[in-house]
Image (cartoon, one colour):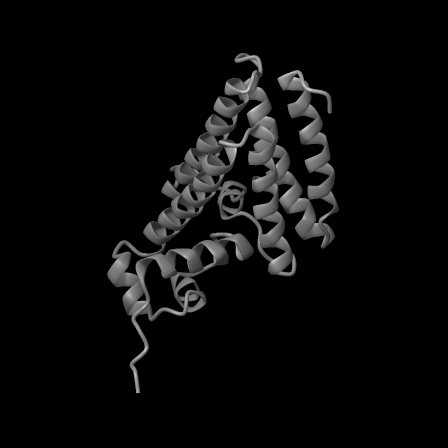
Length: 196
């Protein structure tokens, strides 16, 4: 009989990001993060010796980078294709989780940080948002959008999608993402000088 394989660092990160996307960071202990990732607590501390703070930060960074990779690939086809892929990704996450999961980057961002510090997970969240906005702005500009307008439109895209994810969870339906998708495609077409 084969012995079950030890949990990988990546599996723990994926599990932690998923748990944070469901419950937020403050409402989740490292023990719960390890359990959700189906990893022994000892393995979790082996990979993340600084504990919950390190695991949460790296999980948010991992989730942000995963989205960045998808955006980078899809934006090669143009801004509309990139935004469609961004929306499709989040649609799948909220639907597949029965509206229990959202975006771990957003989940960390909306929690109140301690008064005397900026937690590293919040810094990682800001970096993820900045990466997504930068990629979108670069794609918009490369496809003909006004370079002065592109960063604002990119921020609007990210903020709209993130807000729609939260609305989908609250309403337990995908209508907010569908509505945002239609509006964003119209705005992008306008910015690129194409008919909607």
